[in-house]
Amino acid sequence: MKKVKDPWPLGCGLGHNQTMETSILSVQGLSKRYGNSTVVDDVSFEIAAGECLGVIGPNGAGKTTTIRMCLGLSVPDAGSITAFDLEMPRDALAIKAQLGVVSQMDTLDPDFTCAENLLVYGRYFRLKDAQIRARIPELLEFASLTHKANAKPGELSGGMKRRLSLARALVNNPRLLLLDEPTTGLDPQARHLMWERLQLLLQQGKSILLTTHFMDEAERLCSRLLVLDHGKKIAEGRPRDLIAQHLEPDVVEVYGNGAQTLQDGPLKALAARVEVSGETVFFYTQDAEPLLKALSAYPQLRTLHRPANLEDLFLKLTGRQIREDA
Image (cartoon, rainbow, N blue to C red):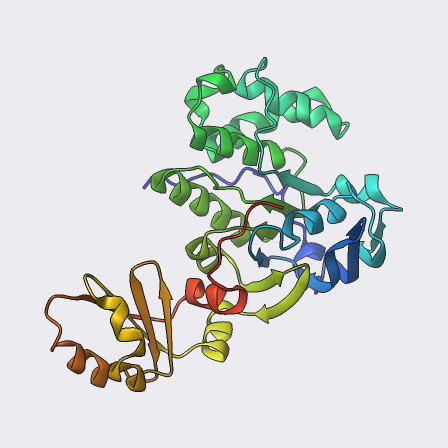
């Protein structure tokens, strides 16, 4: 694999003080209401330099509203937001100067080329054109878009657009990136390339606040997770610690004709917990061997034995019922 260059060469990237800070973003008691609906309810968390904090939860859990308040786009009804020893929204402009943002929606300018999108965006931070132009080649290489410098966004694939959005978010050399579902709609290859770039940024000492619906993404990138539901924080911690705290270690999935009849049968006694989703029965157990042995009497059924993962955690804490967008 070709080595990707640091988009901040010659020592113009992460400074010594940034690596030594214990917390660059602190959110305390954050609440937001719309009419009679409370969409964020007394949420608190912190992000350290070089850390990726993942925020997960069902649709309508309050993830995007939390991001918007951290960006100063929505004013909290209660609580405080402190970043880089500055207060939001009082010091919004000074805080935003040190942030990089990739939103859910494509906000690239369709009339500009890739290079021009970076140049114009850099001007919003009052960077000089010469300074931005010096950074553009490295940013395009970081996004694997050097060959598309003169192409317009309409000529790019979905994955290319997301990588250009990420490169654009880096034009001001931000200390903290706020990424709202940055890989939604991407195919597996494009997602993996985005993950590689985000991991590189973390290695360089950047901090990331990430919302995502992909549990494999959260487990790959996030050092800690914040789980939201109905606007409240219901869990927080390292991914593997949360799994060990809330779940049995082994999961056996059983599916096929007649699988659902097992949920109330004698095999239920061999598991600590049984759940059904669609045509699949999930057996959560401390020891899967007795269950797997008993399932050999059902050759018509298919089984999958695996360790518990973040998706299991998400479903246990927030439920399996599908929710429409709020």
